[in-house]
Length: 225
Image 1 (cartoon, helix red, strand yellow):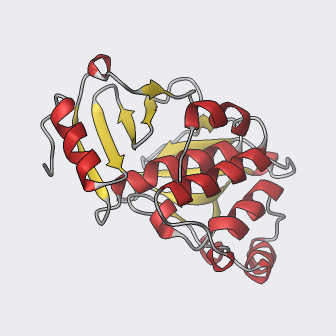
Image 2 (tube, one colour):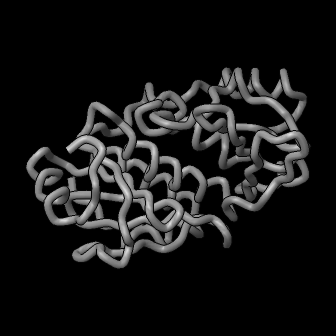
């Protein structure tokens, strides 16, 4: 399965139907294509709405119906909450939690009426304040599915610190996050990587051979290699 993120990502950032198609291609690229049973049943989403007393946005329902039962795509590091664990905090519908509960992601309650609402993030502090995260929930789903497979310890992955200027042979992808969020994605035909904070790199390749070759090419103190 080939994946052309530089070509397909721009459209997916403005059209959630294109985003769902691209997410399916990302899953297939990692040899784990989406299956009908990978989505949450409508009854689980209806039960979440009844429990919370609110309507879930169309994009959130569509995403959970597509890959809500795929933790390999959504939960290797941070956790996409299952419908029965969705909750409200800071006037937001919380759908994702950082792996050590140091940060939370949500949709503002005031935006739940939008089909594809924006998302926000906030830290676990005494006086947290929400900050813009992505312009659309479908964009957040793309970001999750591009990021979380890079931390699958059963796959061809590695990590370390890198100077992004030293990356050659990679194509930087359009930014997914709102201004101020310092995560960048880079792609090539046999691999994907994310750089966080201008130095921390997470890498996944399609094969052991590709991973070994990339670890030799990129000047990084690798954690696993």
